[in-house]
Amino acid sequence: MDQINNEKLSSDLGSGRGVYISTYGCQMNVNDTDRMYSLLEMANFSPVQTPEEASVIILNACSIREKPVHKVYSEVGTYRKLKERNPELRIGVGGCVGQQEKENLIKNQPMIDFVFGTDTIDSLPQIVADVYAKEKAKIVSTKVEHRSPYHVETLVRNPGVSTFVNIAKGCDNFCSFCVVPYTRGREKSRPLQHVLTDIRHLIKRGVKEVTLLGQNVNSYHSDCGADFADLLARVAKETDIERIRYTTSHPKDFNQKLVDIMYANQDKVCEYIHLPFQSGNSRILERMNRGYTREEYLEKIKMIKAAIPNVVLSTDIIVGFPGETEEEFADTVSLVKEVGFETIFAFKYSPRPFTKAAKFADQVDESVKGTRLNYLFDEHDKMAFELAKAYEGRILDVLVEKSEPTDSKVSGRSTQNKLVHFLGSESLIGKTVPVRITKAFPAVLRGELVQA
Figure 1 (tube, rainbow, N blue to C red):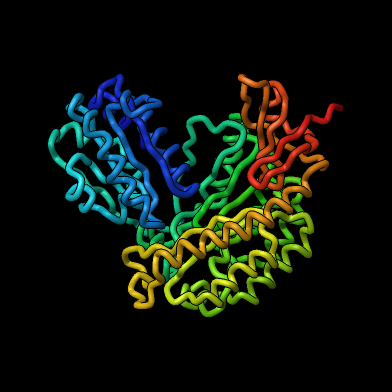
Figure 2: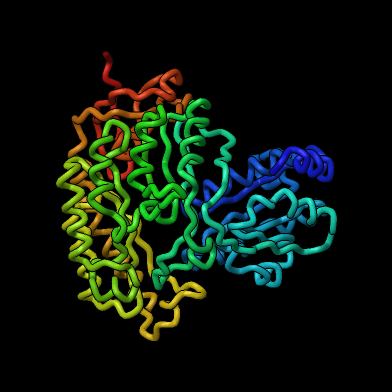
């Protein structure tokens, strides 16, 4: 948004208004929230810590699963008294929920004043200005544009030590369970030079680590013909960034070239890969329209481990997909054990609007889904605790991100994406230091600083 428009909106909206954004969902939503705050600050809004302080409350919500949609209605309901006390309070809903539900949100929850979609975030200051100008008018702005390349500047208010850099948006895969192509549109990649420029600017602001972000990062293709492996190599070689991560990858697009680039740039590219397999059974994978079989997925894992022996793997899993039998679910559990994932993100299948799988007649009973999910977590927990023990006694390089003044501790992440806590001073923030691990749990490690 240009300066003239910003000044006009600031004048229209006045000063002293606070904005509170409630965020849940994927990393893309977190990244979008930072963009919303930045845009609204340009229009003279101030971020506040609680809904009670706000003149504008925005719910930025994911719709991958059914629960977040219900959560939106529930959370808006909690603001009823705030709205009664403050007639100037405006409530909006964005993210994939806003894109998907559109007018239904306002119809079903009258306290909502405006709804905006994932492609209209940059219009948010104008949307809010219109809501105030038109008083009781309700506004819905959810037009999805499919322009390519994807032109968007990274906007991060307080990037800190580590931050996200969006490289692509949307998805062309149309997995039968996934609503993303309908809420975030078709796949669009940013120009490579724009990504490099953003990272160089972030480095000047003190950023040491970036996570390249997209619904499917490794299907990235820039305007100059570069693929994701090329982008990764150029970020490593042409910027002074210290660490590079990326998420999320799709197995069908994960190839030998990408593995070779990771190996060649292992001084910067972290040895951590999030590679969702969703189901360990080939028949279910075909129904999901994932584009690979169980055997092909395992071959990809074999390829990765051969090139990067110390790689740490995590994954996403859907339990109880329509038609899944006990034997097919057992294939999922066995794949988790065979690969040795240190972290899993597993969920019960949830039918989503517009998706093919929502129309399948052989839906799995909710109680069966719950039983299977609990069993999967129990089996993984046994393995995860054993895998965690292997870190005890090891020295890991930890990029310090935060301090905890109350107990003189600091925390940061290792190249394996492990959260590590240890005694240290605030002066360590932004530095990469060696830490010997003294106690390891699946989600967090504790250690002690190795003195030079």
